[in-house]
Image 1: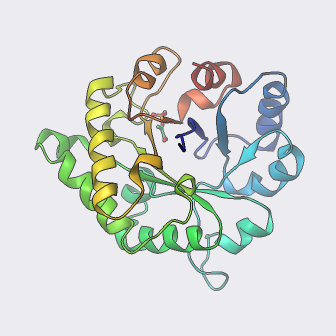
Image 2: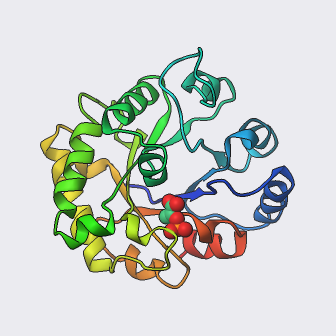
Length: 245
Ligand code: PEP
């Protein structure tokens, strides 16, 4: 029976220069990372971190455009990532959706092109505080999944990971309770099933103010398969406590 291997992602957002990142990995090298862990540094560091540290660490991109090359100023293409042997991409982070106005339709093209070209995708979904207060969180997440993954088929269920990140919990210090997170994760698994995915094998990870203090309780929930971590992933000492919870 195939199992869902635990997965942790470190979303470094727009933090760290090359020197900071090297210091991080040099000290991370002396630690034993017990789970599948991928680091998502800012784009300008991808190629050199991959070259220097890929023997010990997996590196992924925070974003990926669906065209191979062309006049798309500021973007990085799936082919450019593949050329540097980067095999993971975050798609649909709420900061991309809300600040950069990325639509479900655009995100679907990105996810689809990544998956069909051999990149593994961490597809992020989650409701805003306003949407939750109106009781719309399930509807919002269902639509993000249905529209963002429309027409997508995955040959290997481990290539697609869903990150449930309620926007109100990102960078705010507020975490969803383990029970609320579990309710949404179970719901996401059901929606994936209804949309033709082998949902029992797709990992659904939680993100939103994950810290060493709250990871254990979150990971006790049957449908939480890991975490996507922002702030607490910037230092190896805190991130390892989450990964090795
Ligand atoms: C994130 O950016 O994906 C995230 C979950 O951030 P934080 O852990 O800082 O809330």
